[in-house]
Length: 82
Image (cartoon, rainbow, N blue to C red):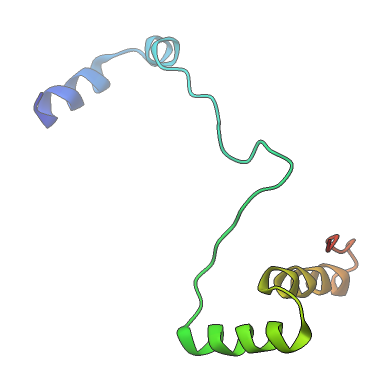
């Protein structure tokens, strides 16, 4: 199908009909643990990696400790670091 046909069919369908035809159930973020990722420069990653190795902990633990500290500085409960 062409893009014009798809666009026309979407625009002409009533909202209730579209909702009944294609209900979306959220699949992400439903488990007790959620995986996250972030971008960091190579140079900062090397520094972080070295810090984790010398401290005998994972980068994940260092990240959680830092985030927990930010929460606590704002008077909020920290994050549990396992």
